[in-house]
Image (cartoon, rainbow, N blue to C red; front, side):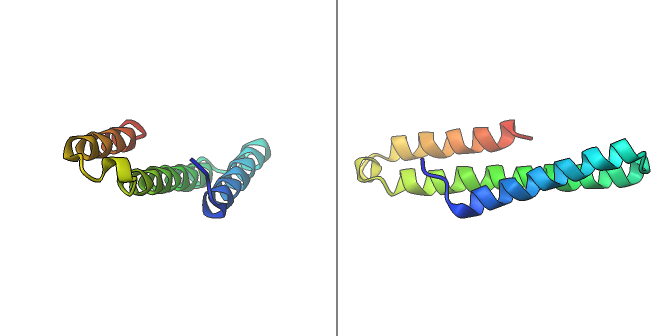
Length: 88
C-alpha cells in the first residue's frame, strides 16, 4: 500500500505532539496538562489508524478480483474491523 501525504502529515503532527509532551515532562508541567496532550496524541493516532485502514479497505474492495466474490469482500471487511478494534 502507498501512503499519501495526508497520512505522513498526520504522523508528523503526532510526532510534534509527542516531542511537546516530552518537553512538558522535562519542564515539570502539571499532570493534567501532560495528560491532555497525551490524549490528543492518542486521538491523532486513532484517527490515522482509521484513515489507513479505510483507505486500504476501499482499495481492496475496488480490486477487480474481488468484485465477483462476496465472501472475499466480507473477509476483508471483517479483517478491517478487527484491525480497528485491536488498535483500541
